[in-house]
Amino acid sequence: MKKPELLAPAGSFNKAKIAFLYGADAVYIGTSALSLRSRAEMQNEDLVNTIEYAHSIGKKVYVAINIYAWDNMYDEVIKQAKLLNKLKPDGIIASDGGVIEILKKEAPEVDVHISTQANVVSSHTANFWYKNGAKRVILARELDKKQIKQIIKNTDMGLEVEMFVHGAVCFGYSGRCFLSDFLASRSANLGDCAQSCRWAYNVYVEEVNNPGNLMPVEYDEKGTYIFSSKDLCLIKEIPEIVDMGVDSLKIEGRLKTEYYLASVIGIYRNAIDDYINNSKEYNYIKYLNELEKVKTRSLTTFYFNGHDNTDFQEYEGKQYNPDYEFGGKVISYMKEKSILEVKNRLKVGDIMEILIPGQLEAYKFCINELWDSETDEKIEFINPGKIGQTVKIHIPIKVDKDWILRRKK
Image (cartoon, rainbow, N blue to C red; front, side, top):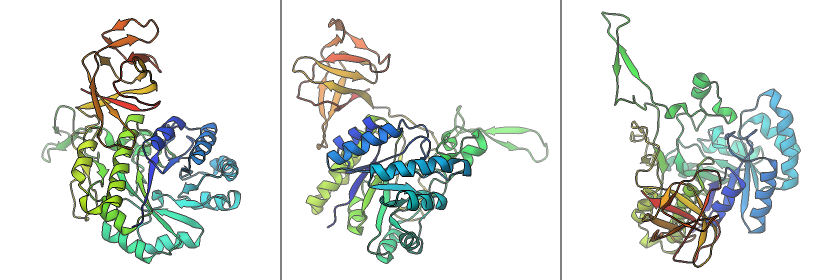
């Protein structure tokens, strides 16, 4: 049984370190100028730091240059390609034919991975890209498992196959959407998506016999989220996916929080390892129960189990978790008073859960005391306030720097 790579998103160098800490084999990153996440906190210096750090601990980094570039962007594309040829990431993710030609010329020593934006939905397309120099194809999310098996069976043995297993699903063909540009003049295909599919909309009907008389059709007082999809979740299907021989399992979310990354990566890390080590005892329920603590929308298998599935719209527009939230991140540990970076309001009496790297179950404890990190005086609560706000807290087990804590609401 081949163990697939667990590939995680990283919107910053710090997020990359969190991803590796909680079990990712590789991360995908990209600068704000040339990837499909222009609001990610990743610049050239962060590229250098992330690649050097990853390679120092035996991990991999893939860099996205997956925009559909206009002519005035190619000077920057060439500059980035030359830099990456020196930095030697483990792959460059791209979808635009012009960009790929530049990569082949200016970064010939780095593997090319074909982005999901290229809409690879057949073995014919996969083989085309392999013949044109691609090392890996990232499959379109619209495929079902029969189609994925067919592609793996009929593609060249030297071509790697990557697929999404968790995260947001775009209202578009493999994420190729023009809605955002049309409504907000922010192009999703240039990395500046306004997430128009997540907006609330008011829908009206017009009375035929009385033109101009518009009557609202509303789900509730907020309107209805007619485009918003649920989040992809294939935790139950991990055994099938591993058995197919997929090379890399990808989690979406370069703009997600460190808490989200630690939670989701840790869960999938445990699920994959547990199935590899003891396939007969795989029980997806315990992993799903943990995902319930971090999800911000309902979950769907999308088309994986068949194209007749219609359960993938989130009409309530939910984008929060009612039960848990990001509590904080460990800055330093001391037996009596550790320092915690505060991410949401904390108070004495709160129930906290420590996300332990390599372990599925979190460690629970109650906050009995808090101290001001500057004056060392006891306090009853603290708000996140300024960026980097910290507090002293007694943590009953030994923890390490960057471990994540969540708070039960």
